[in-house]
Length: 201
Image 1: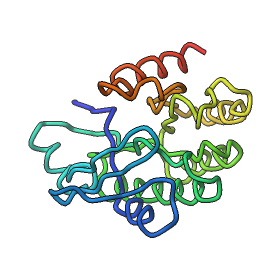
Image 2 (image 1 turned 90 degrees about the vertical axis):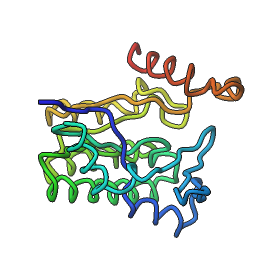
Image 3 (image 1 turned 180 degrees about the vertical axis):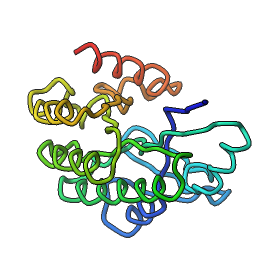
């Protein structure tokens, strides 16, 4: 069995919410009609496979991938104010749950958490595991500059342990990103160092 454990998907509901509400994340369209998700330090182009789950499923069949674990990539919801972050995280997780329900076992998902609100993250992780039946969640390598080792996240780790939940660390804009604006150094170098630092601490 071939399982792809690192892949990202922008639910259309999430992209619509970014365009409909006042957000720190800006969405534009490129010449090919793909949404471009702009956030501090970087941007992502949501090509068809990042936003069209039927197309994604066809690609997996074509390439012989049995199961793919989908997650929401950068910028995540934690770059938003806490109330909005909670709302967006629930929206994304509900969309992922619908995909898994309708298209499993082709797809599995890890939850998105509103990490700027640690208490709400505990609640959402519990909901994702107990109600949506996700195996765990994806964390970013820092939360708006705060290390994952910060004590404010300890209740989240305690709850993850109680639930037997997987926590996957994914890179995001590192502290000191201002020094990495040339030569695409932020993703090429910054991501590696920030993820390593998060895991080491």
